[in-house]
Length: 374
Ligand code: NAD
Ligand code: TDX
Image: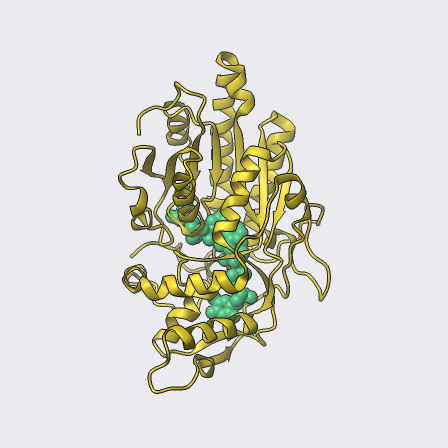
């Protein structure tokens, strides 16, 4: 992609665009021709360039391998491509890994976000001197999570006004990043927008996360490990609905504000795994008969396991026009079908040093080394 500054078109710097949500965002953003895209991704164990095969020959997409903490690289990309907005997905994202090895979470989620903010601040300051309109239009969209708010009891839901109370090293690192983003708006006037979203599901999710882990284990007739009693509740949102909400927040969000995004689809982990097993029973019946549900197996609970998350997305609905367009039933069917149709992707992504083993139990031992691709 050549420099795209001649027109007033949108040019997004999408960080973490080769991960689960970032992939969906890049593919759907280019499919809708919403913006030109420069993807910056470090290609950690969770990032996979093959995910972006659909835009490999797209002249309006460019992939750059690199780290968000590399301020000079980010500064060069912002200037060269006359970027109109940063969308920051890049993160260490798995709670269990943050229990075993929190260091990488501090480095990418906090230090990395800080470096990205500094690069954006300098870029906008430079723009302000030469092109006030472009400086005013610039946005820094930070993608965050509902986990920064901690755990709910049996009732109620998180909103933008919920107090921060992160419980895992992952959630704490995301909370710190959210606070830095907020401070850069209040102190330096950077036009930031933060989204706090609930659990996403869909194609391209790395199989350390609940849904793909269960699908792949079931297909290999392996136990389906449910942490604790399985009654922890998550609010599930199909990844493409989240991506659409982010595009809405980019165009309609108020600088300095945050938006809570969720699916209004609360399920216990046991209920969710039951739905997946029912879909697999229908779409890929178990050899030898019986239901995949018979593979459900309770294991030791996750340390510090948050009991319940739920989002009230009223503000995003009212101010951004956000709507859930994929029901949980439809979204899960699409997701299970995608994993069934993409077994080579699954095999390739787990051929390194991750073999779907149990993670996140090393509370008493020394921190494991940082996560690396094999
Ligand atoms: P993921 O782990 O699948 O992908 C993360 C991507 O970031 C990978 O491609 C990885 O290579 C890249 N990356 C990691 N460190 C980097 C660095 N230092 N520089 C550049 N790239 C780097 O994560 P995901 O599930 O797609 O989550 C994306 C974002 O959305 C994260 O910020 C996460 O906190 C947030 N989020 C996720 C969910 C969810 O349910 N998955 C829900 C709400 C918010
Ligand atoms: O094997 C498992 N068994 C199990 O019972 C796994 C991997 C998970 N679980 C439980 C733990 C959680 O209650 O399932 C639930 C979902 O677990 P994860 O897929 O690890 O997601 P979660 O911890 O809820 O965090 C996710 O949603 C919020 C993402 O990983 C975060 O990046 C996002 O911010």
